[in-house]
Length: 278
Image 1 (cartoon, helix red, strand yellow):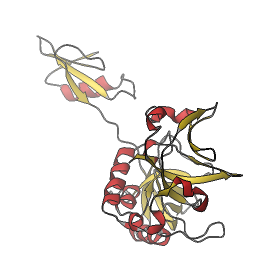
Image 2 (cartoon, rainbow, N blue to C red):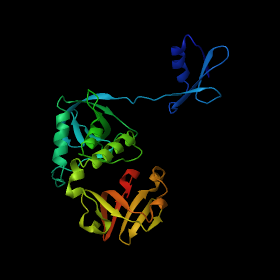
Image 3 (cartoon, rainbow, N blue to C red):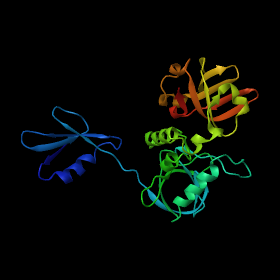
Image 4 (tube, rainbow, N blue to C red):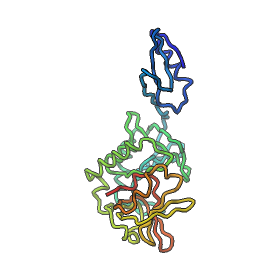
């Protein structure tokens, strides 16, 4: 604990916060009968709780070009993948063009005409393709990841442990979906019965179905729809979800990408935002 004269409280606050663990988000302030002010990370009778929030660091970078709706190329040729979202694919040697992909790219190009961005990283800074993973802000403070969702140009794609701004991202998507903006009005992205999964297994998809049971192994817990269809959650991410048993027997909308192994179809679900109860 640090004791401070009430007339010199500002420097004391700074000193008081320094010994506190960086993970602490609550500080308690109390004043004794002699007017001495105490700051602590432990509550006590009569103490006032102060909310302490840390501002993530952001660094300015120069942009060379926009690759697609959720990827930019910096001047040093490093690729940056926008965190928490996914936009439809554009035409390339590896992939076919998806509806809405060109619109997302063109929108992002307009936002980055001054060629400068601030990048804010989360816990994991690179993906398996060695791309940087970041929230992207313009110099005037626009959060581009969020705005792509607000305009219906992207969908939420949260991959733990990176979860910064997830609640804001989800709310932005819900609003765009309710207003039927962008992809939410396109026939290609409307939900289909999961019994049709064999006919619609390319790109980001939406399916509806009722899981019948749960099956668990060392790596995944699966919600089984039938003998050829399931969705799987990594056991390492189970703490992100309510108990998976609560989904059994209930109509769900499942959002994501389909994987196929012989005649079996599965979808890897990494965050509860991809499972929408109906």
